[in-house]
Amino acid sequence: MRPKKCFNVAGVVAIAVGLLAYSCGQQEAKQETSTDVQNPSAGQFSAQSPGSLNFTLADVEGKPVSLADYKGKVVMVDFWATWCGPCRQAIPHLKELYQENREKGFEILAIAMDENGEKVVPPFVASNQISYPVLLGTPDVEAKFGGLVGYPTTFLIDRNGQIVDKTLGYRPKEYFEEKLKPLL
Image (cartoon, one colour):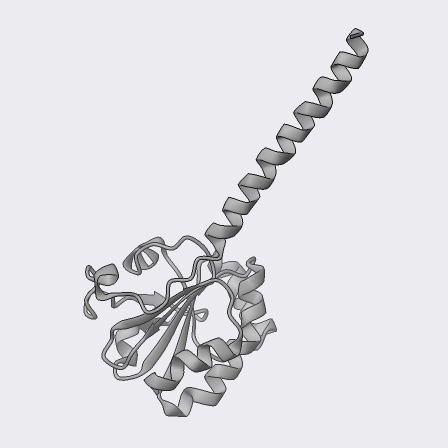
């Protein structure tokens, strides 16, 4: 075999191996991001009793907001970021859920986990006309919820302060309507 032809064959083989390795890695990543943990058992959150789950964060106007302020209500805690496409896609649905269920004792606390959140989140909230409370997140609050592997990650907390659902990733409005029905 001539040297030039040998290099061509070796090049084609190297490209094929590289593409195969890349596609396997993408499939693993896709499987990881589609993880959905629903109706977590008490054991998954046993370190977080309702009292220890409490937190206080500043909202986009700098006012302190505490989870304890919403005692007796069904609360959706939504960890998100302005740069997150699926998070942005969910905003219109969350706005509708909030308006349709607020009078039934439902609240949303959206926790923005952006770097430089105090600069980027307030104008984003204003331009998207978000009416539910948006808080500026911190790593310690994220840790109280067991750490997160991606955004959006949404928790539903019942009227007794117990986490009853955890969802990773975007879900349509109908998904959360079904989750809320037994809680409201």
